[in-house]
Amino acid sequence: MRLFSPCRYVASVPLLDPAELWAQGKRALLVDRDNTLVPRDASRAPEDVKAWLDSARGHGFALCMISNNWHRAEVAQSAAELGIDSFIAFACKPLPCALRSACKKLGVAPRDTVLIGDQLYTDVWSANLAGIDSILVRPQTSVDLWYTQVFRVFERRALRDLPCEE
Ligand SMILES: [Mg+2]
Image (cartoon, rainbow, N blue to C red; front, side, top):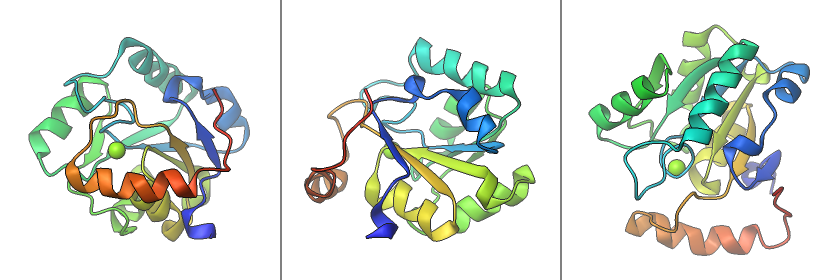
């Protein structure tokens, strides 16, 4: 089903080429926090993720962190550490409203935006509802909230035949 299909499926964020996304006409990146940029068993993003965000900024991308995490201070701290000026915590994905307001805030059209996240039933679904291209990454650890672990069972089944770019 289209609503649950990412445009791409990659092992981790640093494998993406910002130049390629820019050449495709993309100008803004909406990035999930937990298990996309910051592993769930850590409080900080790894160095290669930081370097990747620097590179994306260097290409001219506008960035916004969009997290369902309700600990606003945690999201704010990660965004600040990663040099991401704009963030939305408690975003209620898969509802598309946070994604739409991020596009407005950044002054970009949904079609020029990409969402990068690790969950099919929050990140990818919300992006497809908002008319935004999505890139699914593998969760960066096996540590998840209990209800996310339930969704992971269905997610693994849905992704069975989708090759992951390593
Ligand atoms: Mg996540």
